[in-house]
Image 1 (cartoon, rainbow, N blue to C red):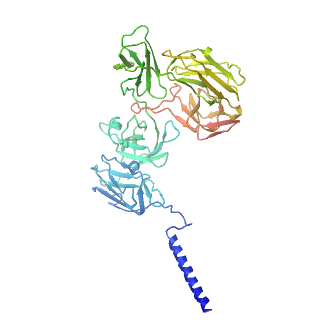
Image 2 (image 1 turned 60 degrees about the vertical axis):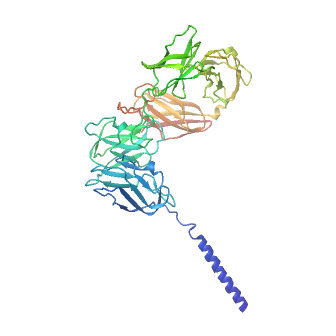
Length: 537
């Protein structure tokens, strides 16, 4: 019995030791328990929060737990903006303290706001301290007025992240060019994807502007920034909220680079802005055999000038847009023309709503339909009409597409002749069509339209406009042969009746034409007919 008691005592001691060891090993990795969802809490600041008569060059902000700064360079909004950005630490390492070293001379009698946006997160769970602000004044009091409102993209459904809202005081010698050259007096940011706020401002009259501000310099650069603005100056204090729409301006027309030769008989002009009325003209002496053609690139802002039967080593040209903009001599060194390349717009499947096209990299000047062979699955000739596009780089085939059919199209040598007289090699294309039950149809009515005409866009889940409708009165709109997808509907109030959406212009005080998206998503399924009635709010 004594022997058993000894063994039991040893077994008991070992069990306790193992339990303690495993307990210690699990300490620090508790399983179960509630997840820490608490945001960091500021416990004190030095100088004190909302200090007045501020004259320090360093600020320390203390928190109740270890925090990290994430994307603080892009997230931090300082109002009014500083000429030299402050040094913020720590960067990338956990700490219970943020230090701000001010490198600029502060304005007198001014309230400053440091809004950290979404940049302060706790070190363990990543909980964000939303829009934390540190505020102080160099004067006798803290300005407490504010302005708020909503913001959206003027045309696109998806809004850009973190636009900047800005106020410029209307004082003596104020002019609108200030947005290009100077920083605003006050800056604010969005509270979420829609609502914005600018706080701690003083009473006065202001210009209200919004930018996506890609360079983070608080200045409007039309080449890279979207802009939105309120059409009239606002007065603070106010009970009004202000709705802003962001848009890209059309850039002033410009020839940023000199024209260049890319192949023999092929010169390109790159441009910026609206190219309507943009033309190029040859000034060099030519023979009667000389031929030329100009086309605009549909993918990029480029004018192509094609010419032949010209043997000199340079060419003199002008570029004009109602008036002559540039005159230039272009050295000609290329020895070979562009090789003709053609290809089909569809391979495999041609959907019933699509148009079959043949694309060319060189302008097409002649089509010989006797060298085009087009048959269906029964080897029957397919009646068709073929049209050369305005830009002479597409052959558009118009034919009666039959469902669940197979087609073969052959372009034999000589079917296409390009600008230089080069003819195509043989091209064979096969494609099929699907059953009509593979598609759906939408019958749409729109109520409460405030004015006509309107443009209706049906947009797929990739943001592509599938079909457009134009209406000058209320009616039903029919969209047929739709592929299974999730569709949205956009309407444009075509105020100037030019059948396209027109953007805004800040200096002209011109707002973009109004665009409205319906929140309802149309989930198109095969072999389904949708009747939808949308109401404009």
